[in-house]
Image 1 (tube, rainbow, N blue to C red):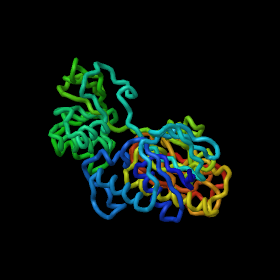
Image 2: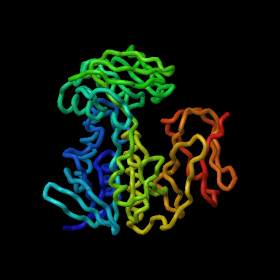
Image 3: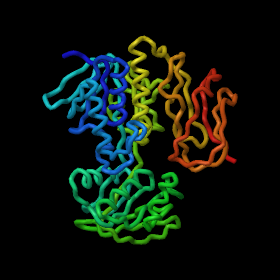
Image 4: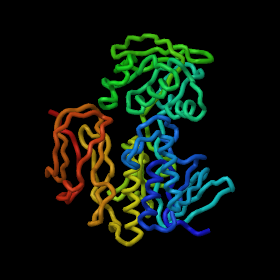
Length: 406
């Protein structure tokens, strides 16, 4: 077996775009491994638009978008292998894979992890009550509606107000279901305007600072008990519960392979070139910090692929520890977690961060007591905030990013 130059793990938008960019950069042998029987990641379950404007200059449904990414990769000579589950990544790197024909091992020159995200389950949210039929997450809903052509309920309660929650509202409406309510544990919706206005425009009640206290029903969901901010409980009749969002990186493979995991992001720690703590192993897309849009992951996959291609050509950044980026007051996570040395073009031109609560004030980047950058902001915990990398160039020590509230 001829070994690939680069092995990409995961055939979602980040993995497929990385494979495409590698071939376009002249990398000879590129193999993509996908554990599912169909390539495309989360978008392949989405029958709605908009996908593809950034990538293809036109609006596509999620399924058409996923199909076009896969067809583009294949047309460029990418070796796409479905139903291949990676079980371990070791030094070398050496990648062990479970295939329909048994266990095999690859010894690529470089590896790109693009294993994506998963939604928080009911158990992870600590929601008590019965376990009747009709309790799903967004992925299961989209699978039922768009792939199996069936509607699992008619009047669900949707838990969450992220962008994916608004997508779930549209999916329900398209399947002939009308949500009974949206429930959000926080004080305000997490989706940005104008998306957060969708439920109210459709006359769907939104309960903020509220959680599900109990789920009722023997064979099927019949109602839920909601607990409001003052502790008052009320019952809402419904025939389903849809848990949406609270995505976490699908980082089990990275963790089992000994790759350093950032407790804040839940994904691999990387430098500004996308390099993990395991030599010659890179990461891109939602495995790095939870959910982003398909278009954002597509762009990240391409950027990390360019860094890998430069590395293979001998133009990569030198090895060695970079300047660590630490979180301070008000900042929940940063990615990448270190700034690499060298003059090569980084994969990440900005530090991405998320806040730990809604804040209004000044965001500051500091090093050894010296202010490197500051920016006034009023933002919430699920908003993407970017700190330009070139503003941190004066740093000679570890960098700390924090919020000074007004």
